[in-house]
Length: 414
Image 1 (cartoon, rainbow, N blue to C red):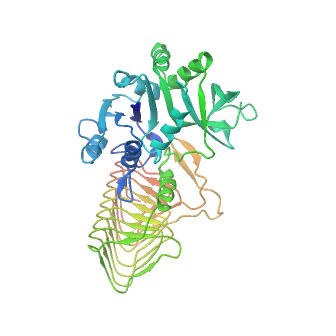
Image 2: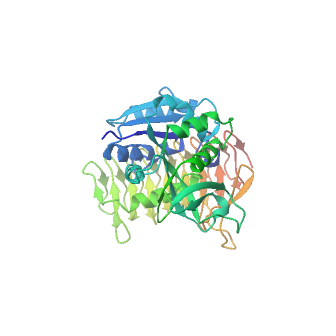
Image 3: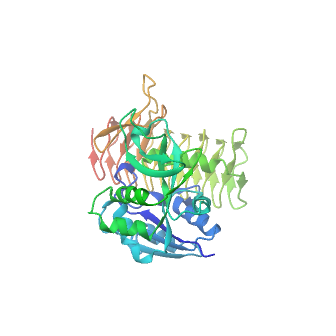
């Protein structure tokens, strides 16, 4: 049986993903040598989903950004890109792809690592329309399902505390049919017309529910990359490439997790690496470094001598010189001068909050260092307070203590 078309929503501004939202779609983030969306597409291919429509923003269209990344992949799938010129919500994105859709189709995000398996589970319910849900202790923060005899009869968006119809929050994968498209097309344009159309379908048809025991990892905010890192660490297997140069005095401690060292990597004298840890292609780690707690260092990155990296993600082609980096995410092609220090805990040890779009968001993390966007330049002896975000293409002058967020393409002198 031919599997239905899969629509991946990869447009929008991804504004809540600041500061890693500047150059491309968030699902194109590379973790452990491969973009999240490539992993998702491989999962779909493995489960027989060969027709995929990806709805993208202008910065990811016609060979740019995400579409350029996928052009370099070796996926054996019929992948079509559809442009969403403006960020007008999920409903608008689906309507942009309507001419490419089968009678029944799957709608999902581009970063679920087991999306092929999930899509099969949706289809096994034998319903024309199926939603996916998972339990939550904070229903007032999400779209919550109203349930009746195991089927969905409505969605309440962020219900008042004590007024929630269930504890089941909607997850970002759906099986839908052309009746849904008709309902959606008849609605006025709005940011939430997808949910409105789904509510209308629920009132007129039996909508199945795939209830998962746990929530799927989200990629709403940049620090959510740590959740995907931990998920990938579970499957990491120790490997040291024969094409890597590892000094005889290097200590590889695998007592807490695997260590993967890829082709062309160079690990200098006296360095200690404690797993889990991923070191990508052509990464250079200088002498007397310490990598511990769970680190992923992506391709072509340089870690200077006497540097300590703790529980962090450093994306490709960046460089960090003689510094301390903890619980942080550093974007692509970032240059960091010597003496860089990240504070990763509040003095009162309370959970760290981050200002996103003018609203303080509780990260739920007691340890969080700095988030740095692509192509930022950080001078020597710069320090950052816990949870600070530094935008892409910024310039931070030497000796600055960064107390608050810095927008993209800004210069900070003091």
